Image (cartoon, rainbow, N blue to C red):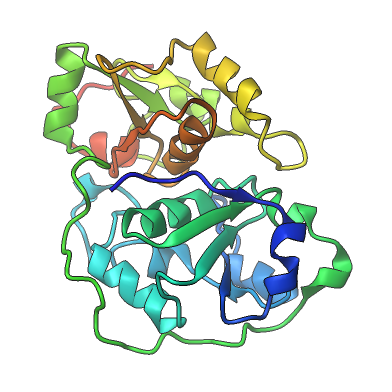
Length: 286
């Protein structure tokens, strides 16, 4: 199933906020340990509900370290999350955060991958005037346990890639691997999160922040395309693009941006560097 890079403006969805047709999800999460839920309680777009990354966008079971810090749940698990909020494939799902969609892109990827009509809100909370925000808990505070709606227990293999396949494709130069982390983490400078410092050998630095401006809005497609072309990314049937990061979250931002600007469908390497570096036999570059 192919993904669709949908980017919406606040004024497009404003008339539908609070209606049954639109589901607005706040997906804030912070690498520095701050609470996304506390930030949501302080202020969020009216009618939004909070979608917790660790509880809703990751495997709820204890996973081996080689799956990375934020292992993908099964499609069944994630669809049960969406349906618990009343979302169906007949509804429009819009995800936002306050960091240029770097976190929300993971929710967009997962929802799109299982066939929901999903979009990112351009600018997110940063683009929202105060009179369209509110504080306090969302109208739904817990996830009811509903039967799984999805019959699929695995993700479309055309959308993800395993470590074994990635190694094979890197060895024969039939893939371009992007690393969405900051340049410093890519280079292995001041690594304080993962087991080892550096990047997967052969990966190209493609910081997700280069896709947005200082107001957290996406650059124009032509500008994003130019940035990717500068690092050697062009539409091609011969070379496939794979996106990674620290744990498979901001990697989805590059997947969205590649689709949005160059109509390139990249695959996600879910464990990303946090999973790769757990295998002591895997080499790391700095």
